[in-house]
Image 1 (cartoon, protein in one colour):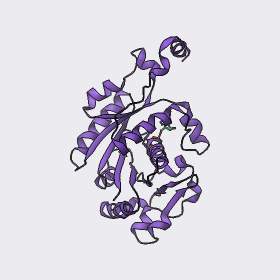
Image 2 (cartoon, rainbow, N blue to C red):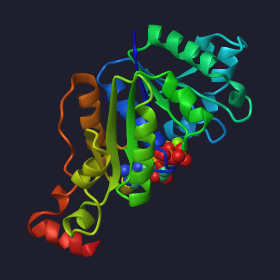
Image 3 (cartoon, rainbow, N blue to C red):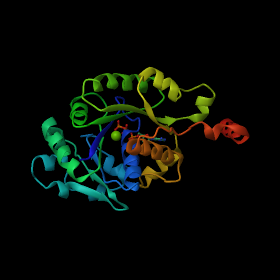
Length: 260
Ligand SMILES: Nc1ncnc2c1ncn2[C@@H]1O[C@H](COP(=O)(O)OP(=O)(O)OP(=O)(O)O)[C@@H](O)[C@H]1O
Ligand SMILES: [Mg+2]
């Protein structure tokens, strides 16, 4: 039976869909069967982040209402056969019930090792629908106070669910600013949220460049290397965080820091 992990945040635009797609790619690359479920009804864009929007015909609501079989709604990534997507569409998918969604997830558990749910921003119905189907949660935040505060509110809500784990990923860390003491670092976020931080992901232009050409991630990028460490945590329980400040240490680092 597959493990179901919801990727959530509270505040919008912090990188949930990006992390969901990249983490899925990393876990699939390690040989496990992964399905990504877009629970962001209305503003769904995981298909775009994966670069497979043309392959989407049916979605989660079609499966729930019996308009197609589950296998017909799944889109396999063209370059990674271990990675599939179950999309959602605006309006139609909005009518899906919490019970119906949970039933679809239960069916996916039989065919996949990992089910990653891309949660909508906010704490409305869509959030509860996504979280109630999951076993574990990854809360994504950026090192910005408003984002951390929303992550804190979300963690309080998550405590009301029977989740096996609630862990944090800090995304878009500017290592140069952390070194100068001008931005929050991982330990600051950990102190506020009082939850284990299992991922630290740097701000990386490669994310924008990859997504512009419909590619999930550049495997040589700092962002992907950081997400590989998160995949290793998810799959094997390792606890190594990517060092977002390493690039800015030493003589070379000094000039890099000055150049930013
Ligand atoms: N590590 C990163 N470095 C640079 N840019 C990033 C990084 N992670 C995400 N982004 C960018 O941040 C923007 C928001 O990312 P994304 O869409 O994944 O967020 P989201 O939390 O899913 O948003 P929403 O709440 O609207 O669903 C995108 O333009 C993405 O390219
Ligand atoms: Mg999103």
